[in-house]
Structure formats: C-alpha cells, structure tokens
Image (tube, rainbow, N blue to C red; front, side):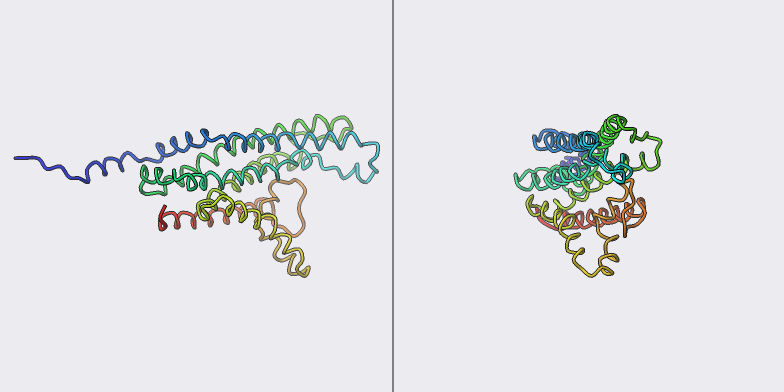
Length: 274
C-alpha cells in the first residue's frame, strides 16, 4: 500500500504550533525592536516620575509668595502624580502605533500568515503592551510620589504612603494609563492609520469634554460623569472631582468602554482583509 499525504497536513501542523505564548513571545520581540517604543515609554516614564517632583520644587520655591489659603489647599498627592496626563498621551500614541505601524509597513500580513486566526495577534499585543505599561507606570508613580514628598517635607506639607487615597492614586494612575493604552491598541486596529487613531483618541479625551462644557449646565453636569476622560481620571486623583462617579465606579465604566472598543476591534480584525 502506498501512503497518501494530504496537502493540508503541513498547514494543520503549522496551526497547531500557533499558541498564545508563542505569539506573545513574537509580539514581545517586535515591541522592543522598534525605536519608537523605547522613546515613547521613556517619555511616559520620565513624565510620570519627574513632573511631580518638579511641581513640588516649584511650589516650595515660591512658598513665601503663597497666601495662607493657597498653602492650606496644596494637595501633595495629586501634585506628586501630576505627570500622568502627559504619560497617558505618550502611552496612547504608542498604543495606536503598535498596531498601525504594522499596517503601514505591511508586516501585518506576515503576522496573519503566521497566525491565520488573527485574534491571537491582537490578544498578544494587548497582553504585552499592557503588562509593560503597568509595570513601568507603577514604578514611575512611586518614584514621582516619593520624590515629591521629599521636597514637600521642606515646609512640612508632605504625606506618607499611608495617607488616605495615596496608594489608591498611585496604583490608579498606573491602571488608568494601562487601560488607555489597551484602548488605543484597539483604536489602532479599528482605524489602521496612525494619524486617524491618534486623532480619534484626542477627539474623545480632549475635544469632547470641551464640547460638553459649552452645553447648558444641567445637561453638561449630567453627561460629564460618562465621558471617558472623566470616568478614568477619578481613580488617578486623590481629590474628588465634581459631577463624577466614585473612583472605582468611574474606572469600572472606563474599563467597560475599553472592553467595548476591543470587542469592535476583534470583530473587524476577523472580517476585514489585511
């Protein structure tokens, strides 16, 4: 008897070799081979770790010029974490580019040839990018907080890690930036163009709140808590914001938005051509 070899056998074996850990290792390699990754993460780290102490230094240098009310209202926690908006922007741009960069160069076709089911590529990108962002931002937030408190100690307005909302704000900053990055990876998957993905992020997080602000007060106050920028910011700040949900409630809503965007990205990734 002669053995028959099915032409589908090599393809089936190849598909069996495509596992999430292997795709994740591939995405880890791709992430760190890009110069833009290192610079964007470096900028995010420096912003988060350095702007807080810089703000504290400025505040303490002009202490003699501050009135009593200004001295009493200094918020050492939020000041020490004041770089999180810039860090969020850097991570968001990198998140978009993580996917759109492959579409621009055509490398996405090679990725999908190696993982024909496509979704493992998206899951791996989200896993690697989120893990790297979370670790870096936690470290940067602690550095910024401790560095700023050492400067605030000059006039005894510093607080410790045991202060109310201190740890929640430190980890909140890292969680909010990480969730933003994951959302932007998904936005890059949906739009597939770097400029379009960044414009969409800027529109939702920076332009939309301004448009809501010009509405009548009652309408603006009702809509404000549901904006992604408002929902996410509560967890990253010790001082409660007006017209917003609780810190964890707002973050849960923001995570819901992030999951919804990821689901849309996954559906489109399966249906559209590369």
